[in-house]
Image 1: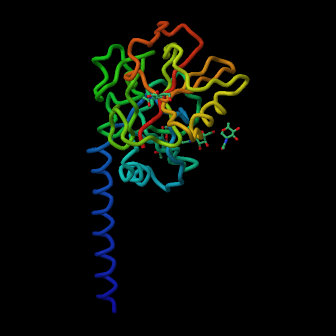
Image 2: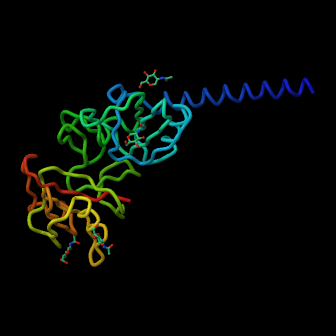
Image 3: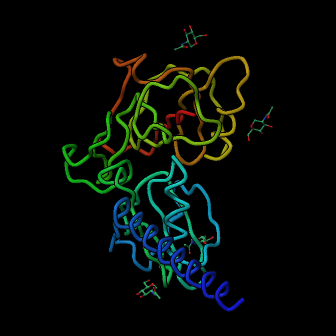
Length: 237
Ligand SMILES: *[C@@H]1O[C@H](CO)[C@@H](O)[C@H](O)[C@H]1NC(C)=O
Ligand SMILES: *[C@@H]1O[C@H](CO)[C@@H](O)[C@H](O)[C@H]1NC(C)=O
Ligand SMILES: *[C@@H]1O[C@H](CO)[C@@H](O)[C@H](O)[C@H]1NC(C)=O
Ligand SMILES: *[C@@H]1O[C@H](CO)[C@@H](O)[C@H](O)[C@H]1NC(C)=O
């Protein structure tokens, strides 16, 4: 009996050592710690939020999800929060004590990451806009394949904003006195055509389109980021 207990104890010890080594390897091989989001929180492009009792389990949760590029972990509340982009702008984040931030290997210079020029953005069909790597207008963000592309199938939820640029007068429909959230829903629930982009003139004008910039390159207007109208392009499924 004693011997059996000892064997059991030893195998448990071995197992847990192995397990921990493995987890730490995952962290160091696949994730990099980012200092710019220490004690910060941002809900932009949040995929999920779950409780994990330690940091390695949180990081593992992210590595299991194909869409997860980065993860915030709060080591007091144990909240583990996955994101489909890299969070590159701590200036728009809010303070949240006890959080740490980890970015997957593919999340380096990925969509959302900070940049100075387009050369800083490594993802296909991205450019540096407003200091962040984003999809070039006309291409949709594809969280599953980690690129910006022409979609085969569209997502039923998310859009990427292009500030101060839009397609001139090719609207399929226009709506007035609606919020941005309502405009997004109106696009998603069109039934007679496929809505792939919409424009929102803050605070309340919504224009919906069945085309992207690639379909109408000569109808593209770029105010240089000054205009209070944004273009929204639907993500890929
Ligand atoms: C970030 O803030 C959101 C909204 O307040 C909250 O639900 C979430 O738990 C916070 N995330 C972390 C990692 O603390
Ligand atoms: C918890 O996170 C903070 C950063 O927010 C860090 O300074 C601290 O060392 C962490 N504590 C543990 C036990 O990991
Ligand atoms: C479409 O979305 C709008 C805005 O949220 C909503 O008012 C309307 O009821 C929705 N229509 C359908 C058919 O779901
Ligand atoms: C958008 O809708 C118009 C009018 O129905 C149609 O002529 C056009 O081919 C559509 N464009 C695309 C890209 O689907």
